[in-house]
Image 1 (cartoon, protein in one colour):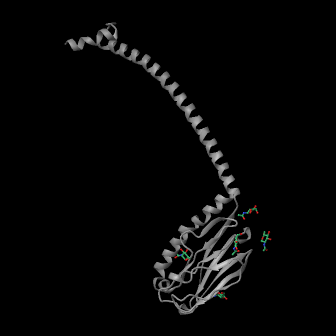
Image 2 (cartoon, protein in one colour; image 1 turned 180 degrees about the horizontal axis):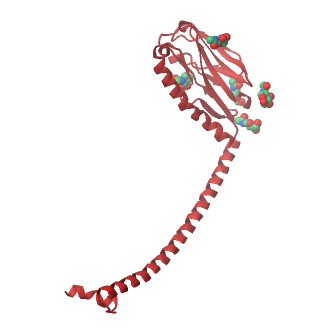
Length: 231
Ligand SMILES: *[C@@H]1O[C@H](CO)[C@@H](O)[C@H](O)[C@H]1NC(C)=O
Ligand SMILES: *[C@@H]1O[C@H](CO)[C@@H](O)[C@H](O)[C@H]1NC(C)=O
Ligand SMILES: *[C@@H]1O[C@H](CO)[C@@H](O)[C@H](O)[C@H]1NC(C)=O
Ligand SMILES: *[C@@H]1O[C@H](CO)[C@@H](O)[C@H](O)[C@H]1NC(C)=O
Ligand SMILES: *[C@@H]1O[C@H](CO)[C@@H](O)[C@H](O)[C@H]1NC(C)=O
């Protein structure tokens, strides 16, 4: 249950952010076009098993270009922001020298195509949480810009969770199938009953019809039908 909630939460946050950004861009078009933008990609979270190695993606974008762009990665540890790494990129395309403050962290973006992603080796449960990719471009009035990426660390237990879900799903499915079977049976019985009733009614209607048109002729259906054909 928890896992599912965590999984869908950032997705729900996405569209309002986009709408906001769109409105923002329209209203402050000129200003927005000049602002530095930090991006952690379309899916700002990752679920990974403890012990695995993950990449925290981040790229920057600037319309007017960068000069001595300062960037860092921060980890939100119970409300206190811990620096993971930091550096200054002199100009575009130059590979920066990155200071790293945390174990098992590697800078892998190398500033190729504005890429400032990092790698977290052999993640533990303590590594799970919120990571902020932060940037400040002196060319753009030193304004702060950042993007947040969530790392969710899970263990193999999730597989068990899945089987449980499957069991529940199949149980529910079975119940539905049973219900549908019952409904079908009920419907079939009702159908048969209605058909039988209809037959009775048909008999009543046709006989009464005959009574009305043929006035008093009490002949059966079989006898009355061939007569029009002969005419
Ligand atoms: C993940 O954590 C569990 C519980 O702490 C541990 O038993 C398991 O070995 C860990 N898995 C890896 C791949 O480190
Ligand atoms: C963070 O908070 C949780 C619960 O609020 C606590 O168990 C944990 O020890 C805290 N971690 C640190 C590093 O303060
Ligand atoms: C990650 O774990 C593997 C196997 O336990 C080990 O060989 C490797 O050195 C670890 N890497 C880092 C960066 O700690
Ligand atoms: C950033 O660089 C890493 C390592 O080279 C690569 O895996 C990743 O796909 C790159 N991301 C983007 C958005 O180019
Ligand atoms: C930008 O971030 C720095 C910390 O990196 C902070 O000291 C400064 O107050 C921030 N500026 C604005 C305008 O938010």
